[in-house]
Image 1 (cartoon, helix red, strand yellow):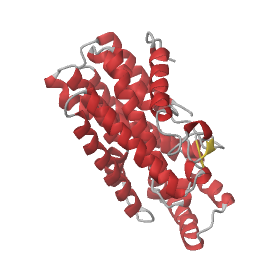
Image 2 (spheres, rainbow, N blue to C red; image 1 turned 120 degrees about the vertical axis):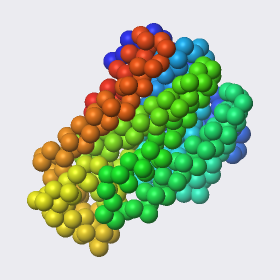
Image 3 (cartoon, helix red, strand yellow; image 1 turned 60 degrees about the vertical axis):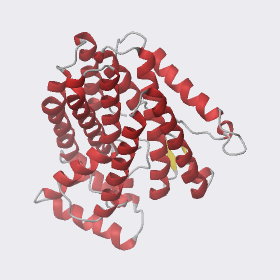
Length: 321
């Protein structure tokens, strides 16, 4: 997909770095060798960090450190999300709350974010404080999302939640890299670039939950529908005069019964996909990238590498898995 020199090697360095940190934990506390869990996943934050670092003219070793820290933080948030959502699978394997129990899964998540804070402190002065702020924003976004479940929330509220829950960590990556590059004038543009990348990434992730027969987003299929979560494809469908009432009836039934009726979920997904609402949601992500991300990429100093970053963000938006 991308021809950036050494990207695969840098991603391997990130994966190896995460592995070393997790294997360094006392096995009596947490034995990673006994847990079948993919801690790197799609590595979207690591890829973004490496390509963003290239566009800022940063040495790969520094970008890789940012990638390790971001992926650790992200995985910690997923462990907690899975406990909140009672999810049974993640990235094709049982969740830690399924294999270890909720208590241990929460504690492993706490341990991983503590390791991430320590790693952030080793990147540059103040980087750990910025990560604390990012985690706070991620948590605020998750709480807003919980508070909005079952409510008739609209696009603006969704964008606010997404900018916090997903955008905050991408923002931290971009801001940290701009600080490492000592590009003072780019601090704020890079922070916005990162946040908007996170928003677009999440909009597409939510769309994928409707577009495939099996979930490609790493979470349980139709989880958002069953939980009454108003993602962009659903919001667009619910605003439609014809499709809205049909979906409201299905979602009200889910909420009233507490059941996970797969046939009804498939019916809801069919409305969203076959009537073009998933496609419309993806187009909104494309338009957001065109207007809010790509102009900021043009400000980055290493133009060839900036073009590769733009290619990657396009690939994130067009992905089918």
